[in-house]
Image 1 (spheres, rainbow, N blue to C red):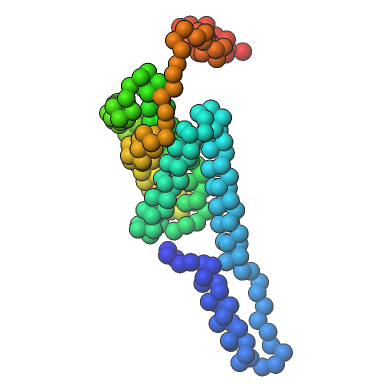
Image 2: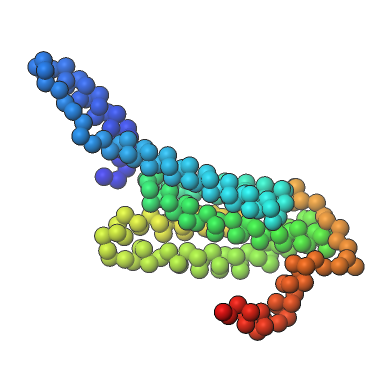
Amino acid sequence: MDGINVVSLGDTIRDVIAQYEQELPRGVEISTVAYQPEEVQKAIDDFVWNLLESVAIVFIVLLVFMGFKSAAIVGASLLITILLTLIYMNLQQIDLHRVSLGTFILALGMLVDNAIVIADMMRAKMSKGIERTQAAISSVKETALPLLGATVIAIMGASPVVFSQTDAAEFASSVFYIVAASLLLSWLVAMTFTVLMCWLLLKPEVVDQDAKPSLFHRIIHWTVDNPIKALSGLVP
């Protein structure tokens, strides 16, 4: 049944059984063959732990490639997005179960995309000498619609679950609603909270225009200038 907390229900049933056992004749006992609340609690604990591990892995990867401040901004944006999604689930009475928790893990990589784009663009504009307020405004103006379009496209990828007529769709219908809500909320957070945090924490980085580009940048530039040669190198 929807809206039933299996763990709390199990505790209530145990209390009822304990009271009933006091009325039974001596020597008569009630044994438990299977106790589903323990399995449900164990499954939820495992998924919550996996979710925390996924968030930590995302933060570490961002820390390596974007630095501490940008990683902290994107990580904070991710946590706020998850919190807002949980509030949405509570308001819409979407239960917390394996499918809903698993959806969070599946969508985790997409939830940081909008925040990464905003943080990276803000840093790039400020490194060019653009004042931080103007950099924030222009970053939002340039990316709001493209990121919203990309978000909607990602949401449509989960839409077949809604239109499916199979028995599995009955259990997996929450996938679409959670993906849609979390991605739209990630876009909203990126356009508001992420921009504000970038404005507060990021500082302009002086870039030496005469500095020799690194090997990584030279490889990227060569790949962009020679796409056919780069693709042919991937062919076995």
